[in-house]
Amino acid sequence: MVRENSELGNRSGMALVDEFVELFGVWEEARPYLSMIVDEDEMRLVVAMRDHAVTVDEAAELLGLPAEDATDLLLRAYSRCIVDKHKDEVAGGHLPALRSTLRSTASAVCLRPAEYRFLCGGQATSFAATGGSAGSPGGIRRRCRQGHVAFSAGTFYGRLDHFAKFENWDDIPAADRRVIDRRFLDEFIARHRANVQRKMQRLPALRSTLRSTASAVCLRTGQAASFAVNADRPGEAENSLPNDTVLLLGEVEEMLDAATHIAVQPCDCRRLGQFCDRPVGTCITLDSAALQLLDRGHGQALTREEAKELVRWADQKGLMHTADSEWQTRGLHAICNCCACDCYPFRAARELGSKGAWPRSRYVAVHNAALCNLCGACVKRCHFDAFYHDGAAIGADEREKPNVSFDADRCWGCGLCANTCPSGAIAMVSCGAEPAREASLSAGPRGLSSNVRCEG
Image (cartoon, rainbow, N blue to C red; front, side):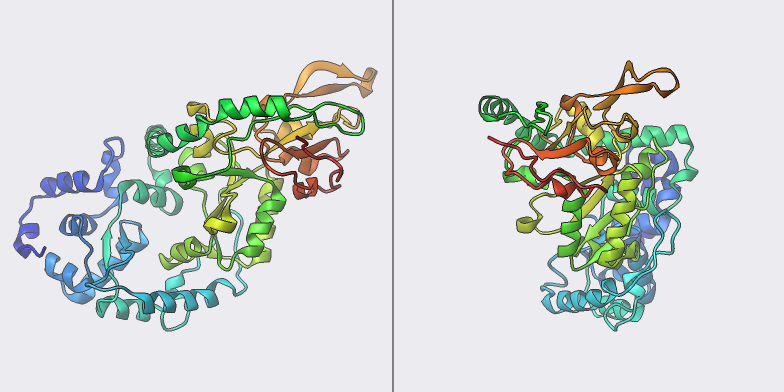
């Protein structure tokens, strides 16, 4: 695996760039800005590593560097998502003792009180610099120097995601950012298309079952409700889909109650897309994902109460909540607070026609027109125009108000409408094969009628 040191030293600049571009999978759209995204030392490191995992000593030999300089380079590249820590094997062995040390140290880090800012620009808390012998800079350097940690090359996809969140993405001209964002979306769709299509294949049969067995949901007025369609119980490979399910605010708070480690970082979708001005510092990672984020020196550790305050604030700002609804069996990973204009899963779902299947819809809004005071808050908060002004007017003279109508077929079940309805005219009810859930999960300010259920 070790090559002559002179091989890298003698390689011309353009030859190095070309080889790096091929090995790292750099997109042609981003190549004009490569010097902003990676430096020459990092390119040499990736080219030297190729598809191998290397320790500090191996990297030093490959690059002809002193061990101390190789350590600096590897840790910097790791922090910038140019290399990853190798998952299992390090210098011919496994690292259960190291993992145990990391977990115990990170526990102390993530459960302490933490100050944070909701918007981008807050000072990040680094797991690598937060006290404790294993998590201190000296401790990490010592483990690297002792050969206990190995690194392997990352991907351009992961590097660009990190670059957009934490570095100078905004220095790229807006027109070129838009082109790169489109390429990122195309890559995202290509990664997940097969699993999404597997979910979509189940939709026709489920629609038929629902229509033949589900009875209408009625409120006190006897008003019938339309059903949105839920794909199916999750299974097989499609469990790996990001933002698997649209969740209500109360469900997200349940996840936070179960989490041991919590951290927040900027939303990559809104940093890349920038189609709206909604808050960016809202992407929550949980447990092992939170530890990994903090281990790279980024993100901000949160207490449970801080995290709950954050998701409630995000909800008020009009952001939907998505996560893995089967977290009790598959483990906690992340909670995304999404908009429909930037969020890659929602943008991809529109292009793939996967509404109801992915992101998965488990609820549908029910609108009681008799209780509606026509304030229009639901029209403003709905990302999908399920609530809209239909052109009619209610009232007379100066008290006349635009009428509010609801199209259940456009509803994705996020609950943003119900959470802020001042007259209690909107309820969220279970749809599809999900068992009935108490409508109080919507956590609206006035609550929802507990007798609203999905039947069938």
